[in-house]
Amino acid sequence: MELLSDEGFRFDGRRAAEFRKIQGRLGVFDHADGSAILQQGNTKVLAAVFGPRQPMASQHGAVSQEKCIVDVEYSRAAFASAERKRRARGDKKAQEISLSLKKTFEATILTTLYPRSAISIFVEVLQADGGDYAVCVNAATLALIDAGIPIRDVCCAVSCGVAIKDNVAYSLLDLAYSEESARIPTIVATGMPKTGEMVFFEVESRLHMDYFRAQI
Picture (cartoon, rainbow, N blue to C red):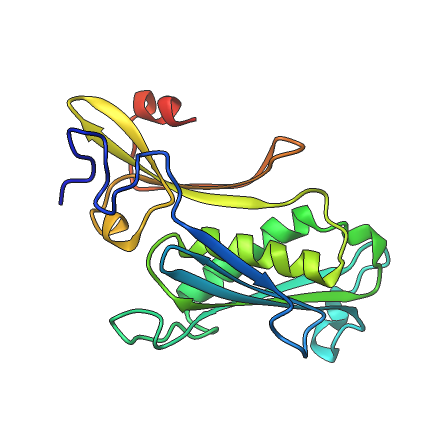
């Protein structure tokens, strides 16, 4: 698959630094304190937030007098992709994603405002077509805003692939599944635009430092 044509276009007609179409709605789940559904291209994620509330019995050991507990659960619907494979909340990959999301939102939410309480965030991928983690972060951020929970800044995430063409590195922003499947070096970054802080950064596969510096 040619990732970038000679004219500078990707397989879906986007330029290298162009995002997929983004659509979102808040308040889509009545039983949650905050919720949102976000679609980037064909990737769609539902996020729901509960809290701040009294910690559950299973959380009592983690209760703090200084800040609230932040729990995040990630799952992927069985119908989310063509493989028809459900990623349940308990499998290893789902646990890794849940932990990364938890660390991201512990750094984002003003947790000291809610001591001895808990905030639970649930995200489910309804359609998977690339950039799943980034869309989960963006959807959960919208759900937190809908819930009225104070945050340090709007948390934004993006996936970025590095395509090498004629010994020149090009950043492909907001990867679709077919681009991820090409197994190019991929960077997933989550940051706060106002403060300029990076709260999550991951490089998937090896990337030469010269190319890495060019992407940063």
